[in-house]
Every structure is written in structure tokens, then in C-alpha cells.
Length: 253
Image 1 (cartoon, rainbow, N blue to C red):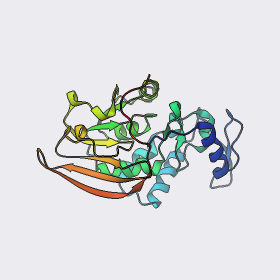
Image 2 (cartoon, rainbow, N blue to C red):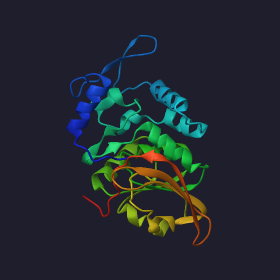
Image 3 (cartoon, rainbow, N blue to C red):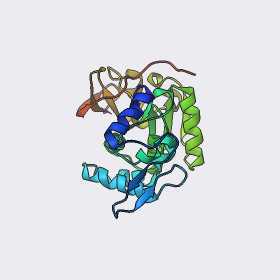
């Protein structure tokens, strides 16, 4: 989920919610469970922190072990500005480039769990953002196609993912158009909210495949699963209220 919000305001809100952050560019010191002082940095962050995040998501109801294992393996701190390293493994969204955010880990896990991914499945992600969600999908053994409307985010995500050894198929383009030349897809994951189900996307599903997407207006959306059961047949189910940034048409340099 990527939210348009003034980054300075979000930094302030993080400080209010989490305690005063260190000066920008400085890592924050937190207390570990054993009472030790741990310095958090994007340059060297203990892998156990990602594992602790996965365990916290398990306690919140995420039960798919493959999703939790992927969360525990992907270094979330490498997908954010290092000034926010102290908050990398908290269950909250954080700002990235272009006024967008990296999604709250619970939201990432919840949407991924709804996909019910199997290794080797062909997945289209709408909204690459930081690249974190794509890394989770890659960790789960999917063949990942991901499209981003902001050229800068597309470029930075590719650099991050490739540096970490993830090689999804990345595209700069309009998410509403999808990737018809690469269809059909087993699953489609949408990380911004269209007001209505995007018809061009659901017709890029194979018969038997499904799309996970937040559908609705600015006031809030319903997380939906839309399954394609025939050439012109689809079944919809609802999975709770969420708030996502509106899905926008077109591209931006």
C-alpha cells in the first residue's frame, strides 16, 4: 500500500507514536528483549529482527508459514531511507520516494496470504513501490511481474532487488493497463485502490486464477478477492476494510 502524504508530517507522526526519533541520518537505539541496547542501521541490521516481525504477524493472525518465512527472510530496512532504520521492523507504513510509502507489514502479509501462492505461479503486482512486496513474492518462489507508474520508483526498486539477488520482471507503465503481452497470470496483486474492479486486469487472469485488490473510494476500501471461473464468469468475496491510496492512471517521470 502506497500512501500520498507529506513525508515531513509522517516523520513527525512516527516520532509521536514511537517516541522521539534520532536526528535524521542517525540510527535510533532500542532495547532488545534481553534489555541490551541495540543500534539499528541500514548497513548492518540483525536478521533476527525480521524474524521477530514475522512472529508478531503470526500473533496478529497471519498463519501461512510460507508468508511468515518470507517476511523473516527479506531485509525490510534495505527498502527504506536509512534515516528511518530504527522503525524498519515495526508494523507500520513508512515513507519512500515520490511521496509514497512502503506498506505496513501486516497488510503485505494479509494480501500475500490471500493469494495462496504456489511455487512457480505467475504473479502480476500492480504498484512496485519500494520493491519490498515483490521481494516477498520472489522469496515464495513465484514468477513475479511488477509494474510501477513512477519511473524513479521503478528504477530504485530494480536496483534494490537486483542487489539483493531478486530478479522479478519489472516494468514502468500504467497499472490499469496491466501487462497483456505477458498474460495470463495465475494471480494478480493490486497495492493501490481502484474505485471499481479494473476490467482490463481481471481479463488478464487465467481461468481458475484470482486477483487480490482493495476496491473503493477515498473514504476506505474493501479488500476483495476476484476469482475467474470462466471466460466471462467471476466470483467476488470480501475480506475486511482497509484504507489505500487511490489507484491512479498514467505514468510519471
